[in-house]
Image 1 (cartoon, rainbow, N blue to C red):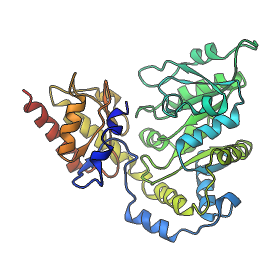
Image 2 (image 1 turned 45 degrees about the horizontal axis):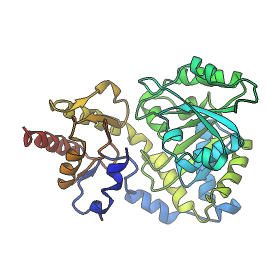
Image 3 (image 1 turned 180 degrees about the vertical axis):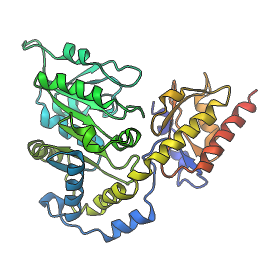
Image 4 (image 1 turned 45 degrees about the vertical axis):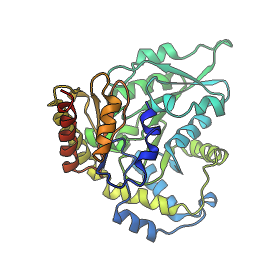
Length: 357
């Protein structure tokens, strides 16, 4: 999946000549307003709980999520891992979807560093799981088995919004069997925007949530773990263990506060851009797009056999960056993608196939 990202790092350089980057919504640069917020941030030593801007960000997100407390982390991977290490001990088990980030994209940290066994379940076409799958996955009280401690869910899943009622039904099964429920909500604000519901509503069934600020929200760094007072106390210890304790980090927390006020309201536009991109690419006969799967800011394109890397290279020469994932290329819209860039992408992609016919 990531080969195209790794072998192109020397070609990208300083991004001179770059028109648009569709690889992810993590590639955004801070706006002038965000830079100003960083410059004006009041700071202190966060390891001593002395950074007022971090405290403000944590308090605000905890309130928005309907949770008791929150903790600022440098990355979403570390936030998820600290949650797993707080819920589970060595020899315990977490249950998750087989395409969820916490299982496939976080270097196996829970198993490597925590001795926690993953139990992945196949997800359906929407990225979801079924209550019966959870029931069947929970291990009996048998010394041959690991102890099932935690259900890990995700929203959104590859840009697909998870139905709140389904999340609630999965969480009910977990809670009835004494499992806690953690939600990887890296792009939870995209889900909230698409559903037109509050963050608090989406968090009601779960015990904790990790929210990424550096994806669609446009900050340079940071994720926030929200949960109970007890969980956050444990997670703070885990953050220290993992090397995530930071000092005058209010300059980064200020970006999160700015994003919550100014960038969350813009997410709907990112979704509109994705739909526009998908419809434009669908008009190219050689390209396969499933419009029904475009629910937020992600489009998955099948360029045809043998065209993944070639199209990636062609567009790179035109100042447009995409990945070359197989079988489908992931395209992500964000606040640094203009309508003009989308039109150019469609035009250049059409031109690519015309030169090969």
